[in-house]
Image 1 (cartoon, rainbow, N blue to C red):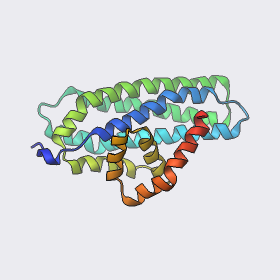
Image 2: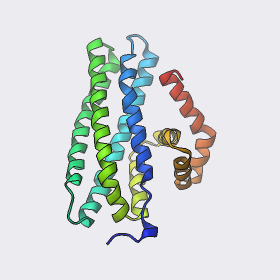
Image 3: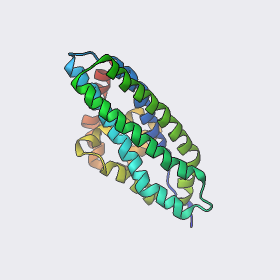
Image 4: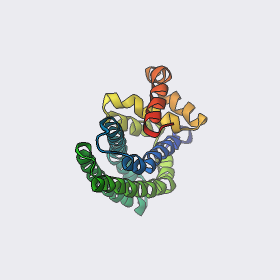
Length: 219
């Protein structure tokens, strides 16, 4: 049975999460191609950043695999083919993520031109697949989630994703989302966040994210 209207979730937060992943993967190839042998600080900065993004993607999709697909499969009749496609695309993204992770591990040891280009091309491929996957999810899955999940179940989905991250990554993840959100979206995110997280973001996270962006992109 669909939840009553006042218990339905606001799925806009997923749009912000997707926007952030698109941003990160779109810029990843240029970060990789800018690496030079011997610049160990830059190499570590970029590779650690991309590992952080990949970890976030795995956590995001893992929470959907754990909670979203099973609930929709139970409640949506007839079951749309898009749900099966989402699961297949997650598998495809898992394979690409594993390839890129292994290549980044090699690149951290030696920035060889061919290896650097391989990593950049994997980032480009991942960016295309991520964009196509998230576009279809926004068009077909989010309306189903809004109609068939409660707000509490939707919040649990986000909490499950955060629980898959290391503690040290929680504030950077929140700060990254808040930086790319519109003022209205940011207000909604902060309203859901625990008071300590809001305080940490205002005191530390916002400035730390700005410094990180400046180091990565020279802005």
